[in-house]
Amino acid sequence: MARTETRAEIRFILNGEDVALSDVAPDETLLDWLRLEQRLRGTKEGCAEGDCGACTVLVGRLSGGKLVYESVNACIRFVGSLDATHVVTIEHLKGKDGRLHPVQQAMVGFHGSQCGFCTPGFVMSLYGLWMRSPNPSDAEIEKALQGNLCRCTGYEAIMRAARAISDYGQAAKDPLLAEREQIAKRLTTLRDGRRVDIGEGKARLVVPASLDDFAEIYQAEPKATVVAGSTDVGLWVTKFMREISPVVFIGGIDELKFISEADGVITIGAGVTYTEAFALLADRIPTMGTLLNRLGGEQVRNMGTIGGNIANGSPIGDTPPPLIALGARLTLRRGAERRTIPLEDFFVAYGKQDRRPGEFVESVTVPLPAKDEKFAVYKVSKRRDEDITSTLGAFRLRLAEDGTVASIRIAFGGMAATPKRALAVEAALEGKPWTEATVEAALAAFESDFTPLTDMRASAEYRMLAAKNLLRRFFVETTGTRAPVQVGRAA
Image (cartoon, rainbow, N blue to C red; front, top):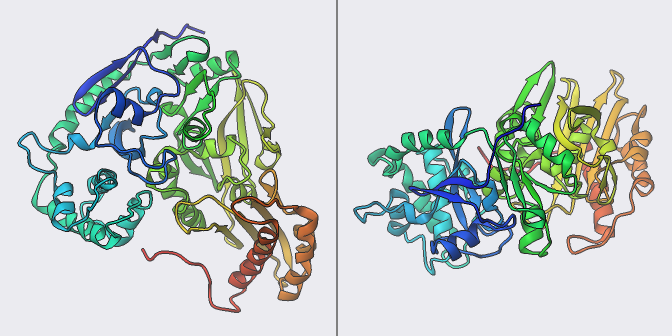
């Protein structure tokens, strides 16, 4: 194998200026770098965990030959992940002639700010929306602002400002539009196909040049922390002060960012973000779209990856239970070797997965539900939006012609040390008539499958009751005996 060329600096564009950093810590956040080293203090620090949106900036990258801008949380985004990107902060929106950007002017005109602390984040999120959709619907506005919190203004004024950007979109061009063609050319130049390798030992960070390069690096450094979207690892640093070095940043590896469908199976590369997966999953498995819309805010969905959600093995990860219920399979890679296993077998115990040193998640294949199957996912959390899961149930059912249960797969998160199938409950249902009496009789089997814990999210008793009620809900919704109880926003 030919030796990969390397360089010892991160290169990206900050607003309009080229940046080259050869001295950067693996755990340095974009927010700290902007505020402390660049003195760009319009970007605020609020929660330091990706919840409040005060630190929102846009990061542009080349995707499929196009320049795509996404809102991200600077507080949990690492500088090491920015190679060949364009970082846009609130300071860049104001024109050289001193005039406000149309999105800023809308916030002023409709009194969308009081103390102003959260305002830059709202403006950046709305700017990202405005670029994608100059005439956004209320549903699009609400989705774009899920990850932005305001304590004093009240959201109605901000919503009025957001609605008004459609008028500005028709009447005025984006002052930054003219620079984007040039930015795309500059980013193309920055993508030079070389590995970034900075520092040594605990101070080392690496950005692989390709998927094969990553496999080689990780096989040689199996104890390195692999960072894709940093929506979880970012909190290890900002909240738990954990040591994560050395770090391998894989968010820019194009070979991991593919999603396709063939022969009734969707294949998702480990680097595909929730945002990138949304269109296909929501179209082919609608209830997955509903779930993804509740996974963090827009900034988190733009950064977090489905592969990362699986690989970190969290018992409350939102995507593993529905993927297990669908019969998903995982492709793991170590060096040039690959193996494929059922996703449910990947989770061995709390904090332990069936993954050898130097082995990583490369992709996941997801069989689509057949036309005669019923599939649903239900998430229970204290807040509807942008909240971690208390418990989450996924159900896949096929009925025989006589109304008996031909097959059923049930998986839960938040009920055990790992995402897990409810095998005893499944056994109590299979071959039986799909009736209320059958479902009620099967509820006792939950105690054989799960011994929930009590923590700050929910008590063990609550989790058990909620899990049983989710099976009841699935029965109600699949039989049509009562009014549907699925809650969702209008399109």
